[in-house]
Structures are given as C-alpha cells and as structure tokens.
Amino acid sequence: LKQRCLLYFTGQKRMARNILRNVVSGYLARDPQVLQTVRDLKASAVEAKEALDAQDIDGFARGLARYWELKKRIDPGSSNAPIEALLRSVEAETQAALQPGAGGGGFIFLLAKSRAAAERIRRRFEAAPPNAHARFFDFGVDQQGLKVTVL
Image 1 (tube, rainbow, N blue to C red):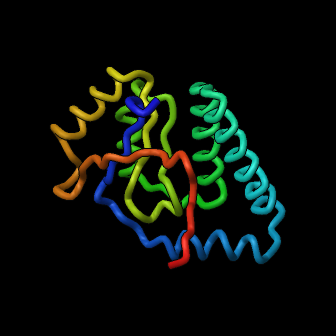
Image 2 (image 1 turned 90 degrees about the vertical axis):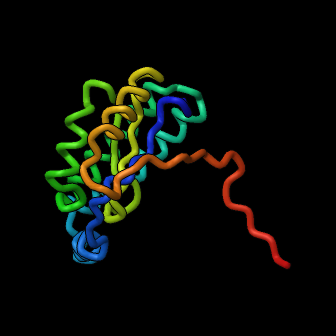
Image 3 (image 1 turned 60 degrees about the horizontal axis):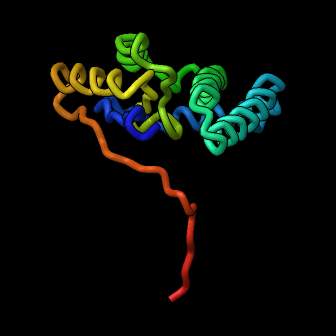
C-alpha cells in the first residue's frame, strides 16, 4: 500500500476559511442536506479505516473516493478547476484521490492502481509540474496514534 500512495503539493493553496465558513454555516443552520452529508462523511471515514485495518485496499480506495465526493458535495468550493484537471490527468492510473484536510492547503493524496502506476504518476508530475512550488512529499502512517506525555 505504501508504494501506491502519493502525497503531492500542488502549489495551489486556497483560503480554507472560506471552505470552513460555508460548511459551518450550513451545519449551524441545521440544513438537512449538510447534516446528512456530515453523517455520511463520518460513516465513510469509519468504513475506510475498517478496510485499511483489514488490509482491504480496494475497500480503502472506495472509502477514499466516497469521502472525496462527499467533501465536494458539502462544499463545492473544496476543489477547483486546476485541482480537478490534475486529478483527471492521472485518473486512469489512480484508484482514488482526494484533497486532505479542509482542502485549502494545496495537497492531493493519490492511491495509485499499482506501484508501477505510482511511479508513472511521479515521473509525469515531476517532468511537468503545474508550478515551481509543486512537489511530492514523503509520508507515513503512524501505527501508534497520538501519544501525549507530560514532562
């Protein structure tokens, strides 16, 4: 799985406060569609985590894809044309993709269909980055979770 995951900084940051304002205002207004989407986001995250725990990569990919669609439903501004164009350019090579967090940080997470597909995506983006700031980041999944100590 690790060899199929890519974290790419697109260099295209947006203001997360606008995204959060739209989402929070819908939530506080108790908009039924927003509330249902929030419930669906929670369920989707749990399903993706359970698939990951079971080492079910296909299930994990379905969870990621569902989560991304739900994020865009709750706030269509969580993505933009340049990000969607980047994702479309590699969709034949990816099993799932999303913008982590609120979406304002400019990162995309890609789950490639194979290790070879991940390598092709990396070569393609490195050969023709969308701007001078775009680059890949190494990352890992913390197996222990948050650990707090008091000194």
